Length: 341
Image 1 (spheres, rainbow, N blue to C red):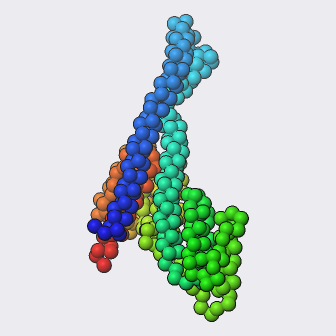
Image 2 (image 1 turned 180 degrees about the vertical axis):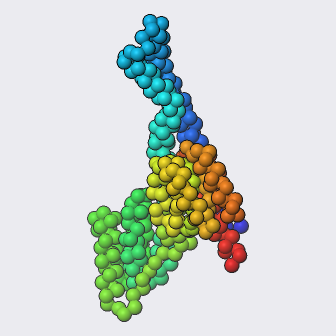
């Protein structure tokens, strides 16, 4: 096993550990959501059922007294119906409140995932910049490296690596200086980098062909900073879910090349039938059963069968699970297209 294979192994293990952490946290959040719903329903029922019992008891007294045409009795009967409806809808209302909190927690979870991948990318960037500095074999090229380094100043400062990079740059410049150690600290490391950067710009202005030193991607997978889902493309059709889930998912996929068509329960069955026309030319069809009625689910399944299109049913009300299915599904499609071509 050579160094490049070890680098790949380390990167794959790091990615796997991040995914494992996300999956465990996702399960914990789902269990927390379920507990919140149970507690909220118990609290609502604990207050409304005794209230309903009092109203029903009073209605029984009106019946015993024979006051069937009483306006007050009619109001009590309406109030009892309202309370029964509130009790019946308690699980739905509790789930909506819990899902708002679930999505907020999932947003935090995804932000942490991006932050971890960014921190890893920055460490790899540091290694690439050190390699770039070491590769320069003359004074002007070593000085020119400051221009590339300055573009990543904030990334280096974020991991406390700016000082070491600047000191390596100084050492490399002085190694090839014919006038002795001309590069030195001038104030802070940031100020020193800016000084060398300006000198490099002056050097470029004096020649027709400037060195234009840039770091390679020996350690990083990509020159771009990590961002989830930006490499995804395709058309995804979703039936079910709810408006908050739709908004959260669309926000996370905004930098991708995914054409997302979504019909929630709130859109209504009549509008959802329009989605059937999209089935034949879509890459991925997902049916989210969280909050979806049986009629919407059945109509979506029947439409897929008529079009001869495969679909996936996802029993979730959360965001991360749905994003995982979209990511894995589209990547599988992209890989299959590459193999077929």
